[in-house]
Amino acid sequence: MAVRRQQEQLGDNRTEPPSLVRMVKSLIPVLPCSTFSTALFGWILFYLTCRYKLLGEQTFTLGNFQSRLQVYRVLSYVFIHRSMSALVCNILMLWHFGGAMEKDIGTVKFAYLTLLLAILSGINYVIIGSIFFGLENLKEIQGFTVVVFAFVGMSVVLSPMRSVVFITTIKVIYLPFVLLILSLFIPESSILGNICGIAAGVVYAYGRKYFPYLDMHELTAASLERYFPFNNLKNLPGITFYSALWEVRHVETTNRWFARWD
Figure 1 (cartoon, rainbow, N blue to C red):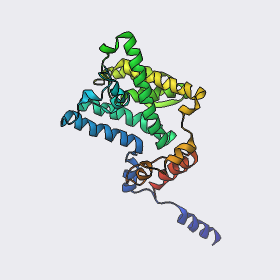
Figure 2: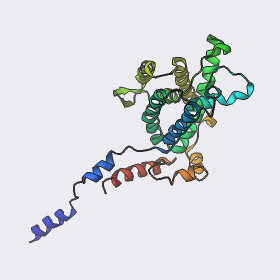
Figure 3: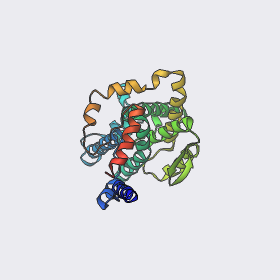
């Protein structure tokens, strides 16, 4: 009798196999908050500049400055795309690399790094491009690809021997060379702009050691989560908001994975 009772208890504790609905839910891609917001903003600007012609795209791309008041172009160029094919390619690259980065560092810090690395990449491009080609002959650049290369350049310095999955499993230290070759097939992609993006990521990775104010501390990022717009982004359905604190982020990710099978 005792053995039979133990078998019945074990049978009660067995978890039911996941149903088809639960398995389908587990396959639905996660929408990182900041990555999704960046891609959505780029999509909106594409329709405003290219489809409806409400805004001039040359006003926001990074190239020849026609006025000192156009300093904003060292940031705005990241969100501008001139064709649907370029927009789709840039969003896919941002989704693949930016989503993984946001999961590792949190939504607030990812948004901060996106803006900071975009500005550093733009400054690098203006300086290097004006030296080799002259400021008047500087070719215009745009798109998320430059920031993606900045993320890759930062990762090369911080974790060069880490393995990532991109087409196949490769070391991070080899990833910039692979992406530079693939960027030749991305519409409207600039090799010089991508190289400047890698340089910006390397400069940030080394500069944060000597200039700590370049980096955003976890506690600072956590405090910003209580203010607009991050406090509203947390409540959006279908969007994943990653906490700035590593402990909270790790627990939330684990619980979210197990919740798919409940």
